[in-house]
Length: 262
Ligand code: PEP
Ligand code: MN
Image (cartoon, rainbow, N blue to C red; front, side):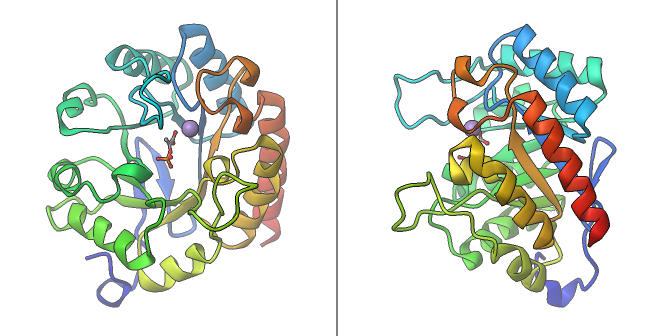
């Protein structure tokens, strides 16, 4: 179902009014994790003003260490919904487990994280819903494995899938991951599904987000996912890779200009 062969036209996915694919470009921006009402509201307003089309924020966080901040849980989703009311931005948030799905009724798009890309029970379950799914590429997943994960969702009936390249594991240790820009033309060739790029988790450092974003836009991506925090130094998760609102605002100007030049 994800294969381009049987579906020559680009799929266009509608996330609460924000379109992705087939020439429609989406920018998902917001904090790694929802932390406080002030943090999420301030950040959301800045993202909206800069031109983001979807607000991101994690309430359930898949942290490497069990002793790190695990997210606010259902309360975090409530704060995200509040930010949606304030800004009008649709929201995307990660669901880690089937048991959490009950809290996601008002969330516009479900994010499947890199660590869950092959959680087939979860994939089948979100495949039964009528809601867009953002499927992040696994840390070491091949294109074929990634597309098969999309197939798990689509085979259950839900064909509203957007792929997200977020950097893969390579021999390089200077960066958190290596952004695979080849994934853009390759996925466009193999599949009709839109693909967006997440330079924040790929690089792991805020100063690399601008060049990687521009490379992604130049490479034909259908959108970007960018972590933005009103005060990155105080972030409970992924602070070093978060952009300040002013940095995000100037990046958005460049992204828009570059898209117009293409
Ligand atoms: C995230 O988007 O905050 C996240 C945890 O991403 P990934 O699953 O790509 O690591
Ligand atoms: Mn993060």
